[in-house]
Amino acid sequence: MMETDPFSRTAAAGSSEYVPVSDISLLSPCMPTKIVAVGLNYRDHAAELGMPLPDEPLIFLKPPSSVTGPGREIILPEMSRRVDYEAELGVVIKKRASQVGPDDTDSYILGYTCLNDVTARDLQKKDVQFTRSKSFDTFCPVGPWIETELDPSDLSVQSRLNGKTVQASRTNRLIHSVSELVSFISHCMTLEPGDLIATGTPRGVGPMKPGDEIVVSVEGIGELKNRAV
Image (cartoon, rainbow, N blue to C red; front, top):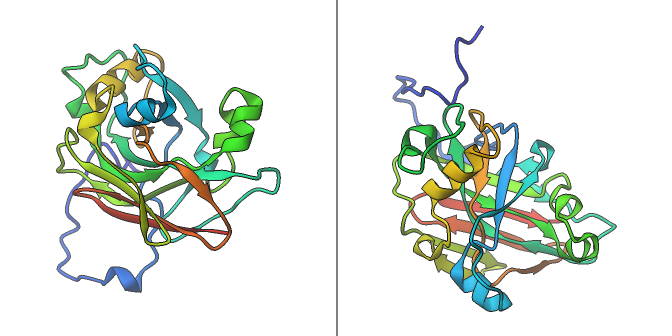
């Protein structure tokens, strides 16, 4: 029996054997009890939509069943006519976090990953609230791994659709910083080890069609590639 979860404490395996990434199939690097996502958290995205900057983070939830890994297919649901990509920096929680101050969040963060907050845009507009549009299976690709040595304050966040750059911004344009988000969310709900925070997407979101490849990249982490079917 494990004495702790795999996120609270990590250690090197001690093996010197290396395997090329091309020879293995990567899974999602975390098993969240919940994904807490943040809407309208980039200044350029707010300007694109002509909306005022929010005073507080706009948060919503995606279910754990929406998680899928790098290289996996994003399944476009029949009930939607427009499914969008949203490139985001993902924050992985290290230990239980509740009522955490904004200056004390570093010790609660295991690391960072790439995340695609896939959204059925037509259903989002139809329903007003976000639950159905954000919750379909495969609507939260995550990966390719968790980077534990990274300063999230000024990182490039991009997406490429079929090789063309469609989103490009930096985390210094976040309205609410990573530390502010972790603190704010922890005052609303207890964050558990392995939980994910999706920090928001920059301008340039758009639709995918069957056969499209979407690549989310975050500076210092790598690339998350998925194909829509």
